[in-house]
Image 1 (cartoon, rainbow, N blue to C red):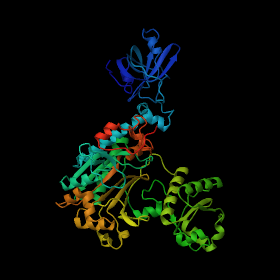
Image 2: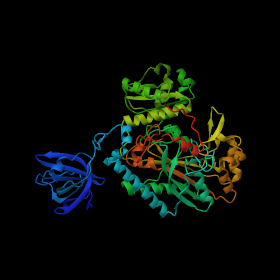
Image 3: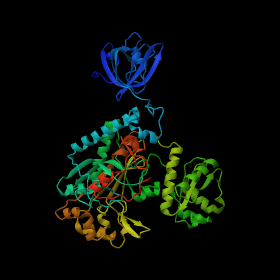
Image 4: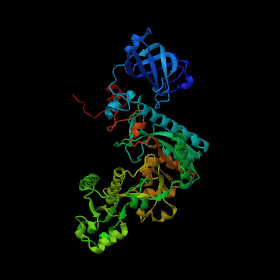
Length: 580
């Protein structure tokens, strides 16, 4: 039987029509000899009625959850008071006059039901059942629509969608490569691309001034909620542009996607925040600007105290949630900060006057300076972290986010975008005692800072910009270096001579010799974007077949061992001893 309608389509206008429906048995109820089935497909649910006077009634009595069936029947309006306003099909039911069992199902090991969610490992093992849940189908529908909206916007703005290779040369890009042995070239290997970075730059050299791709990227790195070994990004590159041109395109892209897919109208211009500014205020280069609760630097004040920890610390900052916390809550927050790497969490309370165990170390003059700077309300608790500047920002920034959740300062459905700019071009690696690029070695320095490259690399700012949404980094991009002389100067700072660079990136550097235009671009995290649109933080909820935290797939049991014959054919040998 070929279905005439889906299970989410029938309404009052279809009453008295004969229809054919196919789907899965979602629930079965026996009401005094009459059987009611909720029939489900990805479009919704339809209630189907089986009366005992039908010759197929005994078959209907044996139906179980997840059996696949087809029915024909007449659409009837439900009795008054029996409608279900939560369903699009809630005003009707279908009285069946035939039943075909297309496939019987065993009892499912997990529930196909939003009210009963299995643990993560079970959900991934039986992903084909988990994906039947309406929420998961909604997430993947939003993902599909977001991809279509992105293509629609970029196509209208003269971008060409061009695919780049999946089997590429191994190049260092910050994470480990996944390596693929070459059967036809013994002892040689491909890598799977961490991003299309080098190829999209070559496309700019090739004259394709506006490129995009919804690209698969693969990185062998430790996993967390917003990381997967394979992820998807909206990858873009443009020629003859500056960073403002790229930001304008990206801003328009996101406004188009959010309006088209989830009907959220983002009317404001994305603010541009400087790296130093967000680190001072939020303790993070991906600020969640949906609420205030900014960090306040009081190092100059606390240096005058008699509290040794404050006096000797490189940096002392505080946060004032304007709420009185109990001792139990303070202990919980102290434990939270300790897990994030803090040596402790100091606090004072403002009642009629300042109270707390550290008050005795703060003179009246220091107390007055604190009150003048913080202007706290009565019955509020102020929290302090004292450490290196980096550690203080990191821990207090995470405490800020924790307090934002605990105090319900974040409004549901609020989307706050911002750009973070003026990043340092280099980071200093303490253990290795050398400079490394903050982004990658092809990021250009700001022209006014290039004079510091040789003598003061730490002062050099990059033409680098990050897009942040609700405290999540959605993408990072930059204006690239397109001149050989400037590229050599940057390489020298990170201890890489041109011969070494030629060996690693020769094909790109050679392309630059033949007239590389000024160009720049960005890679936007598509999985993260879709997750946030769905009100989620875990990108596995918007990926059809993700890996678990060990980078394994419980469903198909990959990665798995390869037969010895296949290894020989690939000219490789495993050094791992097999378990007995």
